[in-house]
Image (cartoon, rainbow, N blue to C red):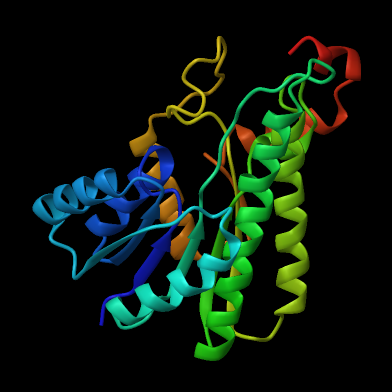
Length: 246
């Protein structure tokens, strides 16, 4: 039986591209997002282009935390099981500190951190019962250093990475692999209005790299690996005055 992957935030951006890439590699897909019309269109396009073993779609807002475990169980039933849970849903609103934009910060934390934790906790419960599995979470190179006009985004992605480190330790020897990914600038609606996107890669290239890292079951990696593995280390030691101008 082909392996299957459950993806949150599959209706656009990296989630959508990863769905196409995994279908090309022969995976069954469980695609979730907030817009059913787009999910159905993606399902039809994937079936026409790649003919994967199965594609199931379901609406899911990861901030409706109590719905996440049911979504995983139901879609596992449709596909005959789930092997990988890819917690991808996220936003970037570019909030500014002290400018009456707290609601942007709150929404960012609720989706990027709490929603991702809800997804991974539900995945862990499912995989503990199943006896094996693979949980993949999408952090960001912004997790390496708090960046101006991205305070809540940086915090959400750093918090996610630390949560996954703790999860890896807690699930040690439970036959559940944990992968933390730190994407750089990948050309998606999440960042296409930014004036500067260094080392930008296409969403198709990003999805190809992500799929390869998932299949290798790496513990953690930047996306792409180079140059962000080096830039990430540099970000941690740059003076605050330099960071403030970014």
